[in-house]
Length: 427
Image (cartoon, rainbow, N blue to C red; front, side):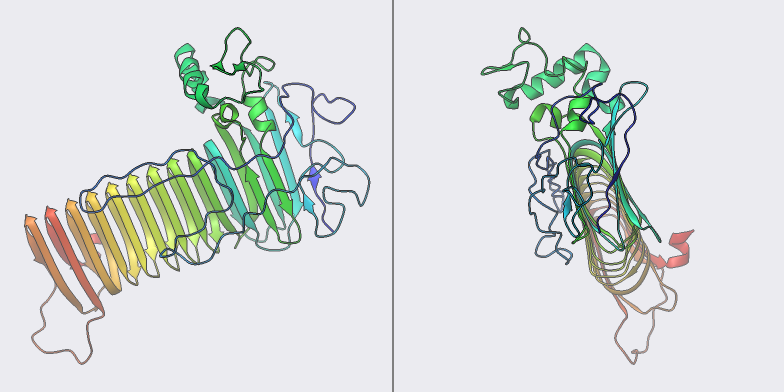
């Protein structure tokens, strides 16, 4: 049995919908964010992707981490029903897109609209989140038995919160793609005589929260959350919080939003145009791309593919074949036990503890420092265009019985290259 539980407080009309701060009814929305990262190697530049239209999950590229994200079947429509066995979670294995026995809308003291939903979940889930801007947080909790979602507007990050200048900027960027049938819009774009599209509620925040599509499939344990389809509402920054059992598989796309994933994920895929991506623990593959924002990854047990146009990359440990690329930004890696390729146009590269594998580190302009794990035999190939390349490792005169555990290539166009023991780097 699928049991969807929704919480509602605040004034409601006889249909169960809140009357304060409401806008257009939540309809079928499409995802609004596709971040294009694309770090340029060897001094090249990288382009930052913006908000676009994403029609499904984040599928890793062919040469990236394995494990496809959920198929992009559209959100199922759900209606509010209070009777047992109705739609919205009444039938076993059905899709829950609406409210069960009431509205999921909640009006706070300040008039802000918050939507909350929750469903029982007996194991790891597929989590697909796509929004234009704001902040996204996904908490993967050990021994959790349900999936929870909360959506509200990020007023602090709203462009109109900066006064008249920010408001005019927001209007200007929205003019070309405004919805033709909405208040404030004519065939020529925004028309101040007709009235602003947020006129009824004072700003577009409540309308944007209403327009978010939230769908849950109990049969496949799959959550799909998509931001507003209309460009004006899609520009409203949202605060999205998802809680699910540990071992779930999150796929997050944003146009201009920071992303934070806590807990243990089976695999993770993150795309953001401008915003920092912070990911805790991934036991499988990780595919993370930012256009202009840093990447912070705790650990990855499988393959990792990390790319940023302009931002720093920091990783605690890598356990599988990995690729890290930045257009401009420092790269700092902790423990490595696998193949690794690193390229940055301009930035320092630090690998604190290399245990084994083939390692290739390249920077157009910056220093390269590598710590080799104690007792590990390494084969080195170091070069620099202008700078010093040196190793502090002991040199063996006899041929080892087996080949080296670590093969290291470190190259920089302008900067120093240093290889030492791991303890020196760690300190």
